[in-house]
Image 1 (cartoon, protein in one colour):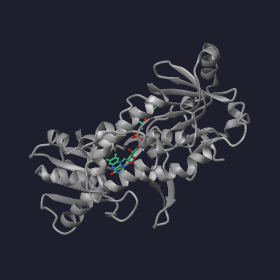
Image 2 (tube, rainbow, N blue to C red):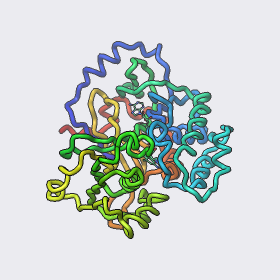
Image 3 (cartoon, rainbow, N blue to C red):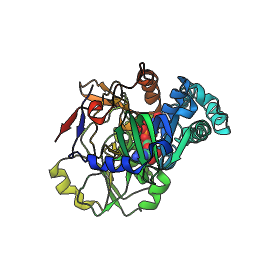
Image 4 (cartoon, protein in one colour):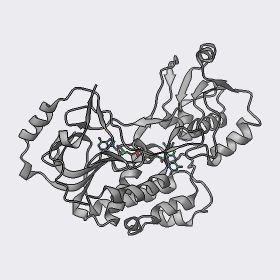
Length: 381
Ligand SMILES: Cc1cc2nc3c(=O)[nH]c(=O)nc-3n(C[C@H](O)[C@H](O)[C@H](O)COP(=O)(O)OP(=O)(O)OC[C@H]3O[C@@H](n4cnc5c(N)ncnc54)[C@H](O)[C@@H]3O)c2cc1C
């Protein structure tokens, strides 16, 4: 079992106060709590139901129930996935197929070999979320703390709701990474990836620095170029990568190959991102967009600690009865260069979940772990 690293010192008092303040018999109890209901939480709920876990034994917690970050910000973002893969995604789960809606019918009717904006899968996932919420329990809130004691997880929400679960799945998602370069005005990546929003954030006099060279950075450069931004300076570290999991795909790949690589506009400058290049050129930019990937959202406090969680990238296990999935805890693999890389995207989550979730189901009477100390190996730092 992977170790569970805890950065700060143990603050068991917090949990004990919690336990003494709540009457165990009055709080709802579940077998499974799914924390976060973006695409990964939705997949987890669907597959647990497919595997025969009873509706009443599952609770999902999310502040919005709006298909996570992709539902909130990225409906207008061009997808890098062909429609048929989104159809495969929905067909992979029996419970998803119980849901009938116009949006799902529409998804089936599109050209299956074309990549459309993400809206085509966000809308069906909204309907599937609504369907799942008619079956399982759901709490519209954020989880603030998990506390393992007496063989169950005691769960507290920010809104001060309390319940227990035997197993917890963290599907908490991620947010764009930011850097701190010397530029007065940052345009958030969530805004930059939606061309309509980006159009409101830039004008034709702007010189915009775009940091990064993956799918998001290419899309942003394409949009800036189409919006006739005066100057675009791309600070990159890695070459464009197309044929890899999570590489540049769809219309972004086409544009990178045809325009950036063969016919780069004169107002677009690409520079290897080192201190020298930044010293020479950042001053010329009045706006900056960091397209340098995503990092895990902050996890709930666990047994009184703000924990930095490590997990097994082949099983999703963080600790017994505590699992991670989705972009926050993706499947890991060794890429062609021999480095550890992550598999992200809805179909990757689905394939991985189909393999690992059956392994999460308890095979024996689960009364093996009575206390926090037995549940984790704790590395004090
Ligand atoms: C720009 C962009 C383009 C993409 N294009 C594609 C594509 O073409 N094809 C494809 O398959 N996928 C695409 N994706 C989706 C991608 O696969 C993401 O990895 C996926 O949406 C992540 O889903 P998730 O459920 O892991 O996380 P999220 O969508 O981030 O959802 C996490 C949820 O957890 C909630 N949460 C966080 N903390 C707590 C807490 N403490 N308590 C309760 N709830 C909590 C959040 O509010 C959120 O609702 C794209 C994503 C991006 C950003």
